[in-house]
Length: 148
Image (cartoon, rainbow, N blue to C red; front, side, top):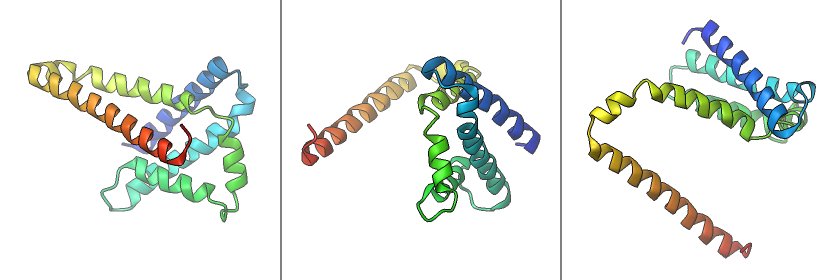
């Protein structure tokens, strides 16, 4: 992906995050701007590292590592990063990610359905198994911790 495309996508994502944060959680654009800028800078730096470093890691791995490094207590910017990111509700960026995923999948639905009904059943079983497995692990952990 070209740098121009990445920057354009990040700008659209930032606007969408601020809009979702405003509509869903009554956080003003000015109040959420520092958090959105922090998240977008981390994403831009992650995309840049992906282009420079020859490892076959996904961009999200670089973004996660950069985010962790920016937020750990020994980082000189951790206070600002954490304070700014706390103003962004997690579901605001999640809305944009869901929209992008839906748009990218919609172009491939015909191919998916042509693959046969067996793939649909397998997809349903995988999603159900993942959900039930996650719920079981959460139940066990919370029970052991005495939370529930």
